[in-house]
Amino acid sequence: MNVNLKIFSGSSNKELAEDICKQLGMGSGDAMVKTFSDGESRIEINENVRGMDVFAVQSISIPGNHHLMELLIMIDALKRASAKRITAVIPYYGYARQDRKVNPRTPISAKLVADLLTTAGAQRVLTVDLHAGQIQGFFNIPVDNLYAMPVLLEYIKEHIRNEIVVVSPDAGGVERARAFAKRLDAFIAIIDKRRPRPNVSEVMNIIGDVKDKDALIVDDIVDTAGTMTQAVDALLKQGAAKVYGCTTHAVLSGNAVEKIKNSQMVELIVTDTIKPNEHTAACKKIVVKSIAHLLAEAILRIHEETSVSSLFV
Image 1 (cartoon, rainbow, N blue to C red):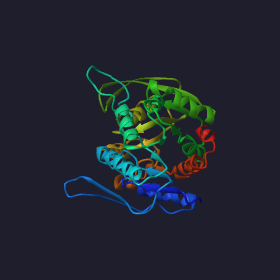
Image 2: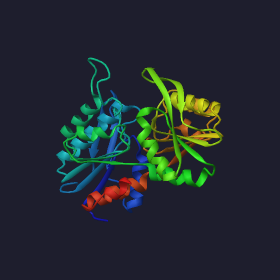
Image 3: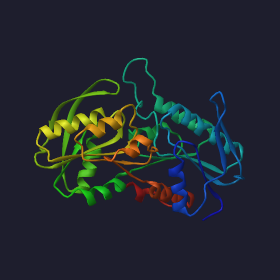
């Protein structure tokens, strides 16, 4: 491995950062990541990074504000330590759902986060399954948006043997569902729902034939799990044989894990873009697949200035 490559990690998902380093056959960078008694983030880079290609790994996950600030401070520290190039590796890009003005006098927080990262000193961003691909346009620096689909499909093909119908939980997820269906040689169905207020959804209707098929609900983020568990009940009422869930980012806030545990869902397949907490790890219905090898390959290609495009399929 090139000695000019360094990978540092914030506190949000150290296990994923360590797995990435193992895939690359190298150790993680030496940095102190702590918090002052008043809650301020404290970061010190404890090794030389002058003239090096540096990657800072940090998901903007719960608590999102703290982890975002930690990432910004780490980038600033690396910039002031004269790193040649700083790439922010953000497996889960928090605030991505606030990507447009849904009401008057509301912010576009995803754009604000992009500006903060660039101002701090990030020269490139590597992320996974952005909630909206257009967020790449919020940056004036290169953005590589990887897809976790190959990792999830590998498990799905091995464990679901019956005829599958891929289900989009809303109209906005149809493109994602179609991409999964194409690779599984399956049909798609769409959940017609409405969202009267944030984190609250109501299933209205199911478009498509799910009878006697194994339904696979595909989403990019599962937060409160309200949509997912409501969809399970609706699909079973329409005659689905079994219902599985599949998502990249398992936010699982509040009592989401309890909802999944008590639902009739067979399994929820997720990735480790967000560090699984003790409740997630204890739930037998939640299967966590690692994307460390995918991120490691992307980091290596970026460092070696070779094509990353083959990882987008």
